Length: 404
Image (cartoon, rainbow, N blue to C red; front, side, top):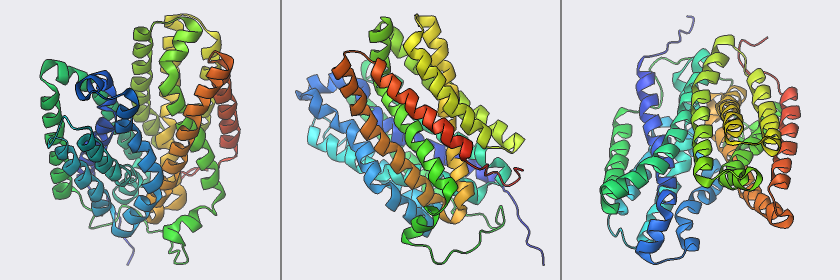
């Protein structure tokens, strides 16, 4: 009998719950960064200590991202991501035990950051298990959108809650949101539908270390890894220093620079919806990878040359829209290259590359600025890297199942 495949409307419910938990991880990552001065004064600790409440997230992401991806592939979407949802919920509540203790806050942040790789690495597993190939890019795009929603909520809502209510009230609101996310996810999520959404992948029983040995033999996946290294690392470097770049090169005040940074992220959110939808519609991935890397190189070069608030605002909107939308395209392509069987470990490997790049590029940009006294050299470095990513993207083969 011919195998029948089916997509269920319930897939959108699972995606929505996943997006909520995913956004929470980013909310908890940046919520103390948004009130760092308040934390310094309240706890009477230096800024160098406060930064660890944020820095533990990328550090633990680098360490755990591949093991988390392997575990997701082994035990399935629900309980693989569920580990992250439970850790996120429990440790968000732990912060309430001693809100004025730096040690308690740090332990809580470490606990939440342990859960983050299990959540973030689940999006391609969800997309390849519950969605048809023609909707895969859209699902990954929406999952990526949740990350930026969480970031913006952390930076916007946290100061408002602290000022409008109180510091403790902010922790209560976020703690309730975290435990609610964990409970709803465990109750609602399913690892796979009753009837599969697509044909199964060929068995690769010789896979080593959770399939990493298999996927690293794939030329297309290696090329996508380089693009991810440049794209995520470059974005983190730019996001870290953008306000200072605009101030030092173009004398744009920090407040206006902050507005431009917000516009860049918001444009990226729109791009994460629009570009994957178009990609699914036209059944192509590669053109959007090429456009994103090329836009990155051009807009970063333009940032060195153009002057004025309006011109830089427009430039950063274009940059955010095309560059940040490249991330869900890369994740979708990686899932199409490796298949559902290794969707978790493949995105884990890409997350590892992106976070390693951030760890390398952020201090490198600072070093170049200190050595030269301006941000031209750091931006020039990013331009060179994005030109390299653009060239690499030309060699990548399109991965959409129906691409010619």
